[in-house]
Amino acid sequence: MRWSEFPKWGKWAADWAAQYHAGLRDKPVRAQTKPGEVLAALPAAPPDQAQPIKDIIADFERIVVPGITHWQHPRFFAYFPSNAAPAAVLADNLVTAMAPQCMLWQTSPAATEMETRMMDWLRQSLGLPAEFQGVIQDSASSATLAAVLVMRERALNWDGNANGLPGQKTLRIYCSNEVHTSVDRAIWIAGIGQSNLIRIPTQGPLRAMDPAALEAQISADIQEGYLPVGVIACTGGTGTGACDDIAATCAIAQKYGLYSHVDAAWAGSAMICPEYRTLWAGIEAADSVVFNPHKWLGTQFDLSAHFVKSPEALTRTLAIQPEYLKTHGADGIINYSEWSVPLGRRFRALKLWFLIRAYGLDGLRQMIRNHVTWSQALAEKLRQTKDFEIVTEPVLSLFTFRVTPQGADADAATLELLTAINDDGRIYLTQTRTGGKLVIRFQAGQFDCTEDDITLAYDVITETAKTLKDA
Ligand SMILES: *Cc1c(COP(=O)(O)O)cnc(C)c1O
Image (cartoon, rainbow, N blue to C red; front, side, top):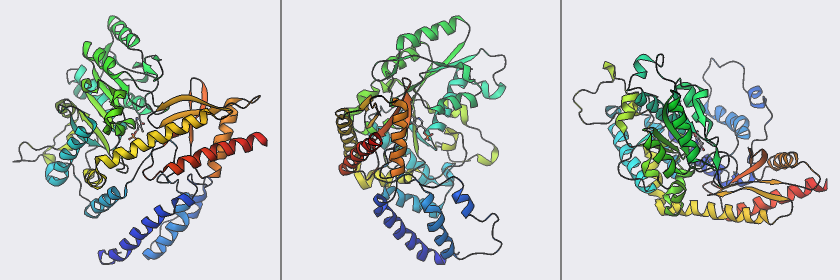
């Protein structure tokens, strides 16, 4: 295929995309594929001869599309959303056409300067103070890894990269059991070791780290000769939306000179609405904050917004400058690859620019408020329904529930209900475990979700439960 043929197939792809989205409500949300089905449909060996695009496209529709779980389906209520707003998709199409590699300012000045401006737009949108500067990371996992590496280097007087950990005191990092597994992996990769990730007990309806327990643990560890280096707090934990007390946690971190990182990967998007900011009250005291516009906001994967008070701490930890990466004669510029683990960078900021302009902050706020309102209304309806129990109260648009039919094991009945719902296909839900109970998570967040979709979710959930009970 040559660029001369691109208009023809590009137009086909644009039409296909619009039709795909228009027809999503008629498709099962979760792929109904059996393991190995797609693999078996793909030839075992690559072709030697060029094949016509039209044949490749026909196979795409036949083999690939049925094996897709439709994250852009308006009734995707599983995990967290991974929204792709059409304006952001359009921007990414333009980026893909140019395909610049934006590791340095000079490898595409527009990408770097757009990123600086967009991250500041986002900072203002979340109500973060001007001391924070942002960088786009590929994922929240990468941002958390970068923060953990900063914790390590800062505590070791910037010597860890040079000499490793031997001969040093044992480093320790603190968090609750509600944080995402990306924290565990960051600790592994940073060489700190799982046994030095210390879990602080949680308390209260938001399952927040107990500040007194946090402080007691840090001071006991110092007494015993450990080197506490950082605290990782969450706003909107992955399982049930747990929220740490950010003000209390950061105050303790500051008192002991520890670096604080707040993971708000999902809930951060909601902070464009001032009324939800109480969930992370005190955030201005954090050293590092991450949230994923690629979750709720609509800039499709991958685009994670990482804000830090001290970019110098980040670049002191991660920057490396062999001669071939030096940008002679360009003073005062930013090379964002020095702010992250990967060197190469896509031009991600363009989709933020398109998104924020095409919908306006007001449009995005309205979407999030709708999701929260509708989801909380559904929780109330389920609470009033016989045999249903709300297990964790809504945090924004996320709550968990289970069924407790008389004489049945609640865990088994809840899992059976979940399986039946997902086999039905009109909605998609996933499970977690909290307080020893197996529960179904419900979150509303898809970009095109309407109130009717939530009403249908109630019908599917309660009708399926009734069918199973009567069977
Ligand atoms: C989704 C999620 C992550 C992981 O995000 P990635 O961008 O996929 O790495 C981390 N933390 C929380 C709280 C999340 O919800």
